[in-house]
Image 1: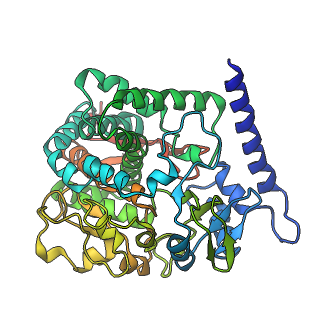
Image 2: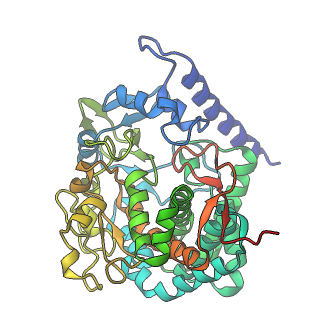
Image 3: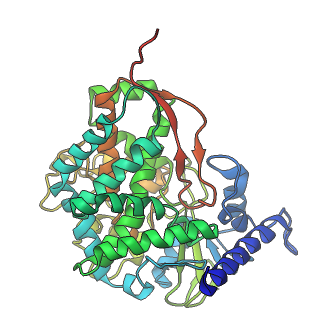
Length: 460
């Protein structure tokens, strides 16, 4: 083990120790059992959703407050709008990284990255790959047999790897290595806020290096790396959460078998109920006053979605993205509709696509943010836009910055094709054991095991 690796291990331990220390010990002059933000990001919560009141405790501190971890915590749509209007925040790692995969914050400030991401994984790009994505989903489903199965390890993760190999033009002879690198890099998004173990960090770094080497020399190498690391993670998590919901809802599975377009509604529901990232680590690129708090350039800021969907006036990041997007992003496939968040009824990026005019402005578009993108209404590959109209109905927006919003079209298409393929092959899916979510995963709450029983089994 090298001196650099040893030094990184010490840094990771110190950061995680600080998260535990401040999470447990009461703060001076503040009643309670410690810093709730530290409790969230350490990634050892109990409970699948609200983590035993952690998010509620964060919200109770107010719209903007400073954690003992020296990070501004911002919640609530008004404060988030102020943040993005003035501080020009960019996604940034808040803890030590062995191998950086995010573009430089200044690079995120430009239109170039968003355009590259949209060209590679936006609505039109997904539409061009629709036939291959459908074929990959069918092939992965065909490899399953009736009986017990882990819907994460046996279906969601393999499908994500196969689908993103198509989206990112991975040569056939490199696809096995690509899939292995995706598995190794799986904790990368959560590692932005929560230190992983040293062994996990070393595997993660090796996976990111492998992906970087694969894309080296490409015109859009930077965007391809982001899509592989964060986009594939979003797709696997979105599909996993949708399948998790179907375990307890056999009627929905029946509807999915009889009406494949129902997959779009199911995925919209998942996005409505659970943002892909419930916390987004940022760095302020300019000074701003947010809810009376003076945020300086270079300060760490984390936007936290603190209210579950279904509650009017949800506290989160919905509707805030438009203010933060660089000038000139209007017209970028897959993101410009979200940039018109205030009052938008249909995403841009649909110009030149097969969107039926009747979908724009309908109740479904307003409530779920979904309109057709790559195909006709109800087809996989559409883009989600969660703006002001959606926020008032209680849905937290999934991601607050354009570089992140462009992850959604491909992730959504992969999840929808996966549901359709699995439903076409098997008549039902039932719980098969305890659901396991990863620890040290405060952003994604990613599933690592989803036991189920699928299909009709012979009884002897």
